[in-house]
View 1 (cartoon, rainbow, N blue to C red):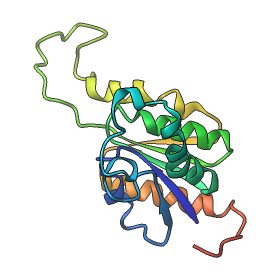
View 2 (view 1 turned 90 degrees about the horizontal axis):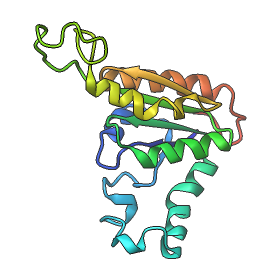
View 3 (view 1 turned 135 degrees about the vertical axis):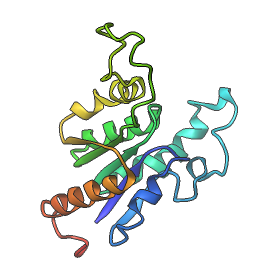
Length: 178
């Protein structure tokens, strides 16, 4: 099974899926923790959106999503904007998708301060978790997209393993067994 792995280039996505070695993982960063196989950033601002970059974006991301059986996104920050586009594209191609969103631990807070504020206080409010939810709620509602809120990388690996086992049952066996 070929799985497109979305998530921050500098993130820990490759560590999370390392135990799942029976799967063929593909991604725009090519496992090298550099910016989309180029070893650096996208270049000067005036190059962004230029025709010079459309070919590499197609080769390093879009083409890989099109040929993948499914997509897994490991989202451990609230600014994985490229991952949102990758999930949206995969969903448009009717690929099963899984968003694994790492919820950060509750930051320490003074419970006496803002205790009665219904919006920004009390022991339940976690502003970092709120920003993660705000970043990914919409894309998680697309058809074919499932999401899991997790608290650790080990939990992420287990959730991804379960998704792959379930998804594999519904993919035609054209490339052999997993």
